[in-house]
Image 1 (cartoon, rainbow, N blue to C red):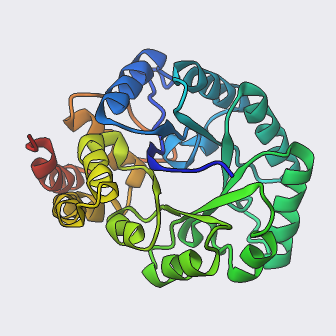
Image 2 (cartoon, one colour; image 1 turned 90 degrees about the horizontal axis):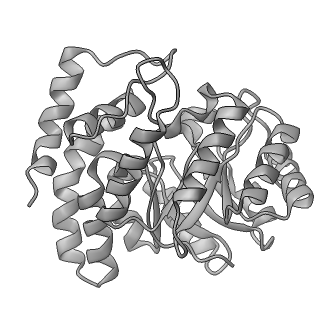
Length: 294
């Protein structure tokens, strides 16, 4: 099984003033994240506005990130689509490009049953033989990848992990205990990432890493070095900004956070709207301790 570890940013996609993917800004962004200590890359997820890009744009982004990556850096592609056939096609392209795994939520717009979820993921594996990190985000998808589905999928060697983004710690604990050695728990609820680590999450697919990578990576490194007190101290610095992120307009705030770091990555595509002055002020205030971190 592919071992997942460290901080892997759920990458934003930079856009230029005309709304096109800005690969110059993208290279600068990835370079800064690598310097902060990330362990891999997760392009074309929800933080990357994948659902607002064409297939051609997603392919260009995946190729670009793959070309930037160094040996030893984990590559996980978001390959979601509304249909199973679309997921299979996207996943096969990611595999052909050399990605190590894909990150998959349930197909959007469908709210499938647990039986349909099982059938869907088995079909993707049968067609592609690709490693899958499940992505359970009921707040966005309207349905949870429940224990019924996880029980049925847990012994498939291609189901290597689950990014748990329900925000419910009890659920993360349940997964960590129920699937030891079978499904890796991946932190996906950023404001309780320290708690995830306490329950065995060795990796973190992290949207906030786009704009606070230095502290996020330091927190992860401290915890894995056994300095849990230091890790908690850093988490306490991170938590206010992460809490504001969770209050809404997540991707817009990620991109604004990059701007606050002196690393502009452009605006979000519609239908995402801009932040209000009040929203910017709230997030900037929460980011200040992070920006001031030595």
